[in-house]
Length: 398
Ligand code: NZQ
Ligand code: MN
View (cartoon, helix red, strand yellow):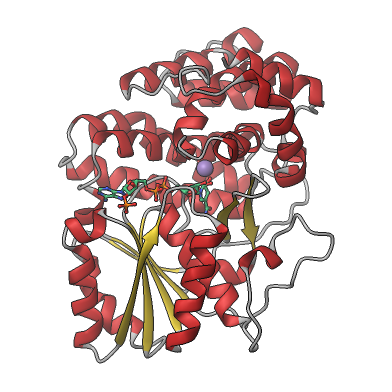
């Protein structure tokens, strides 16, 4: 075995039906005044916002609600939340919702924690600058309560934010971004409508497929990725078709957690690198949907150009997706594309970029954005890629 180095997840996890109940007793150990960060509608409508406030207040915590998070959250949304946290003297940030709410909570925790009297923006910490502001242990502690099974944000050290002015969507990365505590309650997850189940579930699948073939993969990643892939191939269609199938919901929640670990121990590759610019230029296109439009084409590209090791990993993906693979070669490896395509069809997400409203005249700017904001995932792709390759991949995904 080759020598390898990787980070390990650093989050306490409470997993299971009804686990939201322990929110107050757990957060009491971390802080006194919580900024509770949510999206605009779902958590309020479903009653989980009120439940969370009640659990926290029952244990003597003060709660300040910030409910303005939008999908693909922007710098403005984070900065406004940061001001709210600072003005109210919050000492812990709780994110209740999907990746958008949790990432916003994490980003607020960084900016509010580093406030020293001068106005502060999360963008100062973005890796697009020559000298971004350092993220240190001053970041406030984060508690994540996930309402989707897709981003792995509840256990990862990333927080994504979009700068609408520069059209850059980036993942801020730091070990201080791993939530201190994470709660995964299937009662919340079972409320996802089918379209949210599909796009978030496919996001989780791409995390594990990408981290598995990534140059940064290692035996720890391989184990969690294969386990998560199997769960997603087996259970995502069920969760999509029957939202109250608790076994399917639990399986997807586990897969999402393994996938979040994979993002910590390895690194995603080209589909993530190319999907971020899609949502940066077309904010109405959700992350998982953009991945639905790009993944198959990139899998074919990596198999066509991949070395033996890469091809054998795609053969493993094919097998995990239920395909019969006799001996491993490029032809057999392409069965992985068939397996993923069939899954996309089952969850009605087999889309083209054209279907999503992407225009060819934005390709050049999107490629530029991919090279500034997603250099890490581009470099982690098992096959080297040029600008021309990316242009081709975007064009063929139309
Ligand atoms: O906004 P509200 O009203 O809360 O409604 C949300 C939103 O409209 C709704 N929803 C969420 N949970 C629900 C629910 N509706 C009913 N029942 C529930 N249980 O679903 C919509 C989508 O929510 P969102 O949080 O945007 O989705 P997701 O979890 O896919 O998060 C996407 C964001 O995470 C980033 C993405 O780029 C995107 O910004 N990612 C974060 C990563 C990380 N931190 O490690 C990695 C990922 O690759 C990804 O980039
Ligand atoms: Mn993703």
